[in-house]
Length: 196
Image 1 (cartoon, rainbow, N blue to C red):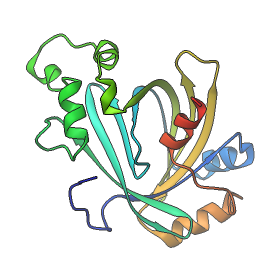
Image 2: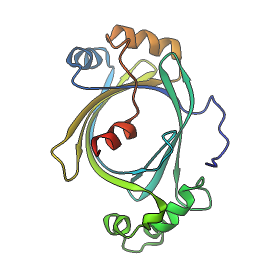
Image 3: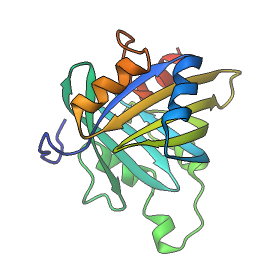
Image 4: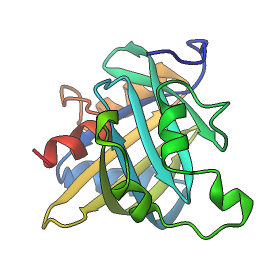
């Protein structure tokens, strides 16, 4: 797979765990200096390469590329793409197939219909989800607690994550939250596994 070159300093370190983790959730809320709530609609696009995390949100293709791993954290470089020319391969083809430039041209656009018309030869699977998320600020770090409803299933996935630029601070926060030793699994991997 071809991609834009990324410096390993790009992106933020992320640590994501799955399940209730009630004590950690409560502690995050207690430690936070700022909190916000949002509901998000995403369409995840799955390929054979787990080092890329692709989704469409608000008719914009968002890609994250895994560029580093250290002390159990993953560093993901991210970008939003509005033209096929700027999108790394093979997602440039997917961008064209989904006609994602249409919303920018003012044309009526239906992502569900575009997904249904995807060429099966592309080997791309799509899953629509709704996320109910609480975001927190803890010093220079960010945290989130998210419940994910997967369309056409009764599945609700629960996750929490911490992220930031300073790995030592993140390691200390992970320990404080009692999450040391918990497996770090990216969002797209768990959503895809839930479909199998």
